[in-house]
Image (tube, rainbow, N blue to C red):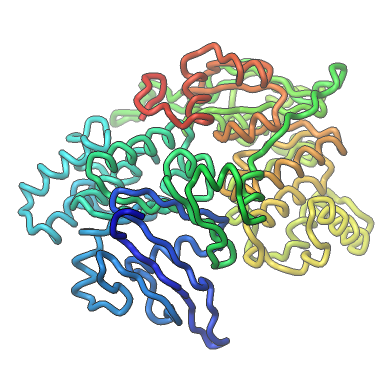
Length: 543
């Protein structure tokens, strides 16, 4: 480095004390960041990235957290053990942080104005009038549309992208020297992700601040950072210039990360394969009621006249931004959401079937949800979770046979059969998703709706789940409806792609044609965002 480092982390170790003894989770981490530089801290969940960043600001709970060794120097001053008064002046003033999920970081009881202006009042001693003017200026700077009208809004009244812009405005309020961004775009659609990254780059150039970017998305790393550090199991295993590391990774783990992006294309389904699901002119309209007598004055057209079909062994990819109607369409196809239009499953009209008539068909129509942790009962063991469907549908001759079936399906999804005795909280995110897939697969369905099954997973785990889904489809002739905003995963899995926006079909066709030669501006904007991360400001994409 030619400049004196703004931040120096030397031999940092982080441990936690408990009745079971001390546990060290970060071991000897060292890195530097120069003024105006972007350093990416890369690794899978649990590698120690976030707690290393929290240690920079001394935001861990001390105790039980402690530092067996190490030093954190900011502008030459030691942060570890610094007086609370000194730390309070630096936090939010000279060092600011953007967290992964703004909905849990913003106070649901306070307005946007109050939350952004708070740090201005605390750090700069502004009165409320001056803080309001500065807050409005910041919200406009981060590209929040109709900023003045949003001052009195609460977090739940904003979209994910808008909430993240508010978080950025709050972080930049006092023009910090160092901004720590902890997975700032993981929960966002590809188009919003591209806008947020472009915004951060522009603001960084304008303000000359350094950026510590924590992420597991290597596309973001390559786009944003000059240097990177790769973390695994609490240790930094490789450091270097971003382009050099990507071109010639030295550590085996770095090579695994770089190679983990979903690759290849799905083998096409048999042209003569039977149609498993066919839907025509499906509509899901939610009434808007107003007045004393709650008359219907309009409708929210969540799904507005969509027609699809899926054959045995085929995957239909459904893509679009949050709020486009993807999940609502999936719920309607499963008859879990009231809708109008024709829906046929294996040549049987199911659109008007009552609940009792649908129940026998539930065995053959299954769903895998986005977040396996919230969709798996914490009170049931894995064996009980997977076995539950067998018991409901009367499958298996007694408990011994059901256990054999459960063990077999756990093996098929890559889990140890002995895992059936454990509970969901004892597994990683990728393992929990395998359990969710096993729960659906154990009933030998013909159709599985996969609702964002990989979006919450690390890149390496994502690639494993894609390979698993491909293999299961080949082995069982499964039909998939794959709902996602991750276009790289969709391209690796889908035969046909349906692009949705505001409940309507923007584009539909074979996967390669839609990806290589998109016909609408909206689809082109999605593709650009997913593969180039350079769409900020395009008119085709909403903020």
